[in-house]
Image 1 (cartoon, protein in one colour):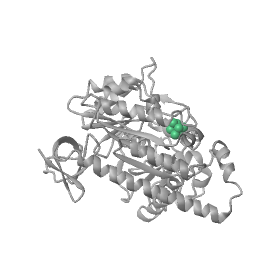
Image 2 (tube, rainbow, N blue to C red):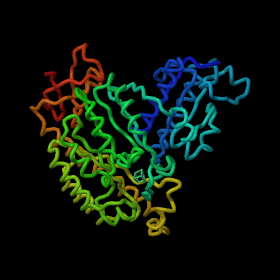
Image 3 (cartoon, protein in one colour):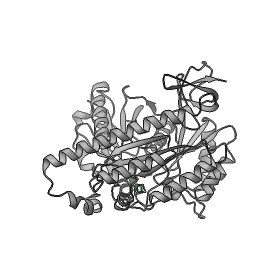
Image 4 (tube, rainbow, N blue to C red):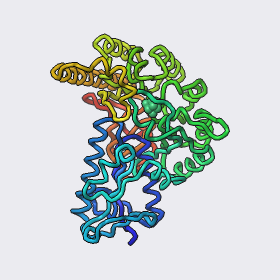
Length: 435
Ligand code: SF4
């Protein structure tokens, strides 16, 4: 029997969100009503992530939640997912609960861990996921649309498991992106371009990300485009030139990972701190109101006190608006790459290892405090100014330069609308009054 309702639970990056949005569109086209979990559904799709041990944990929690909801909320649902699915199950369970399908990077990396979970009916590989959503325009439930233009990465940074799970770089042809962009523009004031390694975008004729962006910006009057996370060494002159275009959000999120060159080398990152700093200086010169955010990993094997001190100092010199700080987590499949540095740790007594975990935790805390301070300082620069912001709910809006404002919107201003707000600050929080 064809399912009538489905729920999609997603964790992880913007790429995953955009793929869940495409799956949603597929279901809608099939006449399936997509409900918000925990409403009862005939099928629960769980789109997982495995970038860190924490992402594994969140993914497993979602899988278990879906299995519980399937049993509790929909005890007598039919079990097929899409027409293409063939579900194997015992006759008893057919009448007892809804279906659970697990997809995403954890499903790709460790299907054997997911299949035996009571309630899980199907585990999709990433190849299967891409096949299911191919060519579909995402149907977002959020205030901003996320458009995937690229997937895969040919690099093998020593800590990264995702590039091996998502395969070699693949780009969506520019004509297809332009067509999907037009359709999303009809309903959304902001479109976020995303990819696993966005700067690796190449159309069939060799056009890079800047060429694609230039083409989309020319069709974006009255709206705006934001770039999702982009690798620092892929930000070229052509892209920097586009930063001065008012229709491109003044926001760069760039994974730095460490401010110590030896650690960057051990991570196999293809740039050094000097390159990074120079690139940001040019970006800020092109767009002085730019909001710059970085990812930083604390506790990569070999990061000792002096290398952390170099990172701390380097971050202090950068024109940052915020950081995303993670503690290093060794991913299955990356052991060989990280081994060279891990060797130094072998033989270390358990107590010492525990002490090292505490040190890493303290480093994470310290950088998060630094991030909060920079967030405050960056926000304070814009008090009294008027900026365009996307209404997220009746209570919050996101400016082009990535400031989240508390707002109180009139009923006519729906989520996704682009409006202008004057920024003010009270007790360290930013608010916007509609202009
Ligand atoms: S560039 Fe990014 S996606 Fe590619 S291997 Fe490095 S961390 Fe992974």
